Image (cartoon, rainbow, N blue to C red; front, side, top):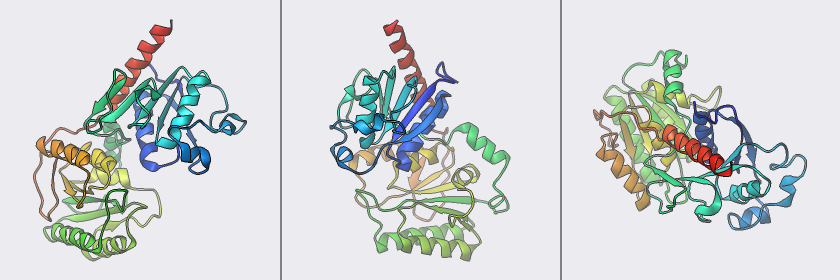
Length: 321
């Protein structure tokens, strides 16, 4: 725990899963009492973000910025930037932002960005991987009490984290077929596939992955029951992850299991720099249908980010005393 344990905190996002997971991961590492608050994703104020003002209606009863002021606010996502700036004017003592807000380092009292982003400043911390909720403690608990849907599967277990189309990358039919062929090779070599898809996964790839899991005696999460994402990571002997999601890559390398990265053409150079660094430390290898014996210490930046935020908060409070 940190000196902030038990303090009330607002989490401000527009509801995007990746942004919320990053904020909640840091909040959990801090031990604060997180209150998740979502700003609107549409409308003129959302269109003007991150540079425009916050919608005044957010301060009214029932609004995102209404209620007793927390000790700190943590935000992510460009639509949340105006609301975070408004928190300062409303008297919230300390603000933090995760990722580059595109509005400068003065956006918050504390900022985290990945190493590959350019934003720097005295209030900015950088790390190789992104923050998330896949903590060592949660992984250990998932291993101690295995999900009954997965506990009976054979070894080696291969967790497959399927992403989907993003702003920079697309799963063409050819790329989807290449991925399915690689997964089939892993299954043919004895691997037991445990597959989960995201909301962005193309339907054709989703259907093919589901059929492959059924054909080879693996597991495919069809959306029913509790999401087994954490359980997949905890029980995996090897992890296959698609390169469209830096968050999923960060979560995968937090396990210490070998990570096979299925790289899509057109990966942005800044993301490629992160992947290259992970390959250099022996955490990640190219996915080509072959098992690779990778040995490395689990990589989790979340505790480091939480400690730096807590230190910045305490220094800020001393400066105000």
